[in-house]
Length: 85
Image (tube, rainbow, N blue to C red; front, side, top):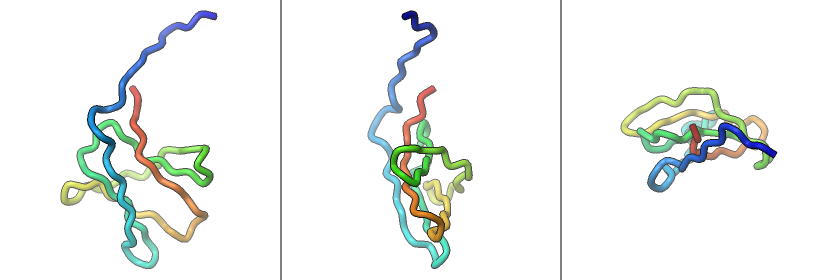
């Protein structure tokens, strides 16, 4: 077996940013994490096995990236994943 074009990379330096979850209003959950947080991508899952990037762009306010989530959809899980180039 031949493997071509393999590149090994390291995750971004330092500890990963903490993802906070808090109620915003009865219709919105607020996810937030420190900005800047280069090299990390917000992902969601319904089963903790299959993860998809969240394509909504967070707003940056007071040194944090923030995004509102509708809590009334099916149960979902969120994480910040280190992006590898």
